[in-house]
Image (cartoon, rainbow over all chains, first blue to last red; front, top):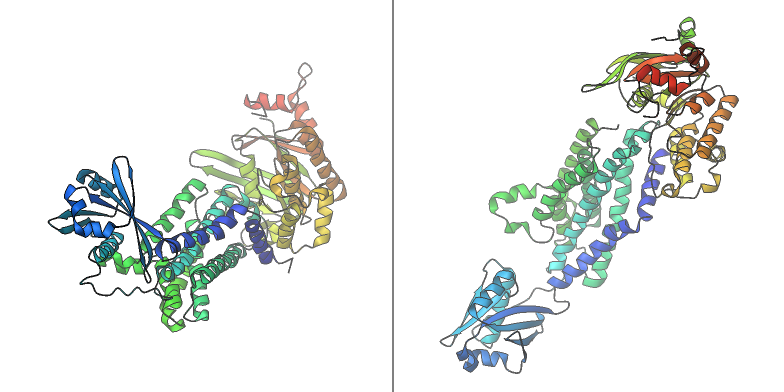
Length: 364
Length: 259
């Protein structure tokens, strides 16, 4: 085994990875931290603080509606602004803290433009007006909660929050993060590293031996597959123990689509690294591949928010295919036949890009 | 221009380890190698000397099969590169100019990797570690080695496969005199023990003189002169003006060897 070039090539890469603490942090620690941060921010674990502004009006103090709402709230004055702290505790929605800033109309709108406050309240003729950006989901949610509270739950339908496993934001997020981890790990780990090896003439030195070129490239795929599995497993087990994430579908299907994703991105990475020997250009090439997919492929939020016309294009992106496939296995209980199209698409993409990259590969 | 006619023209081409015929390599308007021919017999040590940009590295890389010539042919042991890559890679020992290795990999692991390409085992690795005096550094990461130790590692890798032909591109550039002398001694011992051939590119006259029996002077992609050092010097010197290699080079090109 020790005399086998492929084994040695894989071993060298794994050792380099394990001996670089920075890589361990960015490869494993950072995705877990990101999942934790986003999971906390978008689920009912922990308490949120929502800022809102109230346009100051002498009448408002006398008004029953807001007076009732702010009764018994802690208040203080800072920079000539009166600030109330109001906490709404809901068994189902969790604890939500409001910071309510009484200020002038001009200042309130400046705060909204800056993103400091989500909603502005103004009382007129016994009615409360709500100003907010209708495109902001957060602002809409605050409006719904506040209007319900201010009106003492009168004339409101019941809110049934979906907090069961599979319907939460974190259930949506984790498969996206796993997919993004595969893409980032491979694009930076293979593409950039191959370009760096070329620029340092290590590629040239290796090729001056009887080493098989295919073994060399395959070793990158194999080493990255092991690393991607480790990264994904760390992220999954963190989410499993902390957020109670479950895999509803087939584990075999999950393995196959994951492998297909690794193959797809390895092919793209080899293609992207096939010519240049300048790491600066490599940096740009990797970003050209990863940035559009990170934004469009629905890693953090659904791509269905984009215009209808571009959705078919987005759905053809390898990261979208991988994320949608893994997500359907995680939360919809999908089995292999449900993700077979994604598997074939990813495999086809990987093989096509690998062959094209291998054909034009600049070894020295 | 005086050029010593090689005795190689009288010997059988089969006895030649390397035969280069009218080789050319241009990079846009730059004539890196411009119609060079040379022959190296089995067991011969050759020094390619010339300043930076003379075309030494391009010539050696074409012999190594790392660059394709625009025209002309390269034969190694009577074989062309095309179709014989695997065979030829196994008989060449190569040390490139400025090679980096994997940073966070030890000397031993680096040798293990390269040995695996030739199917070699631990005994050979141990022998090489002792030969290049890196046995005490076998567990040190490559990026923690000094410049001289890295050069010794590069030389060790070149010697790993028991090569019949060594192609060493400036193996001692940038080294202090004692490290340079250490590498010379390794190569000298090797020459005495085994009948191998070697092309060595260098800026150092004393290196060429110490190790090689034939010297080829290159500039601007062409061979200006070749022959044994003493013969070259005597051909170009006269009673009132005794030359060394640097003087010789200066008289031919108007430039110093170490430019």
